Image (tube, rainbow, N blue to C red):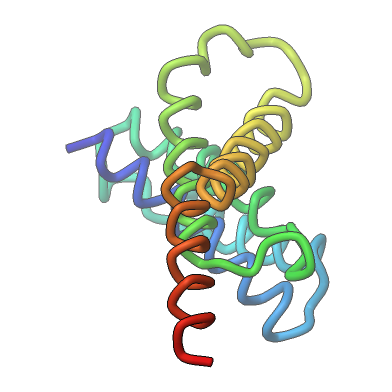
Length: 146
C-alpha cells in the first residue's frame, strides 16, 4: 500500500506542477515551489494521517516529482508521458533513495533520468518496426484511393 501511495504521489506531483507551470502560466520554479510548500506544510501540521515513514517520504517524493512537471510543453505535451515519468521517478526513488543519502541533487538527478526515459520510450515507440509497417500500409491505401 505504501508503494502505491508513493507512486500516486509522484504522478500527482508531475502532472499538477506541469498544469500550474504550462496551463496556468505560473512558471516552472513557482509552480514547483508552491505545490511542494503546500504538501510540506500539510504533512507538517497533520503528521498523524499516515505512518511516520510515509509522512516523511511523501513530501520528498512530491518535491522530486514536481521537478518532472517543470518541463516545458514544447518538450513534453503528453499527460500520459508525464504520468509514466512520475511512476518511473517513484520507483527509482523507492529503490535507490538509500544510495543518495547525504548527496545533494539526488532528487533532481532521479527526476531527470525519469523524464529522459519516458521521452526515449516515446521516440522508440514512434520508430518501432510496427509503426513503420503501419505507415507503409497507410501509404499503400492512400495510393490505391487515388
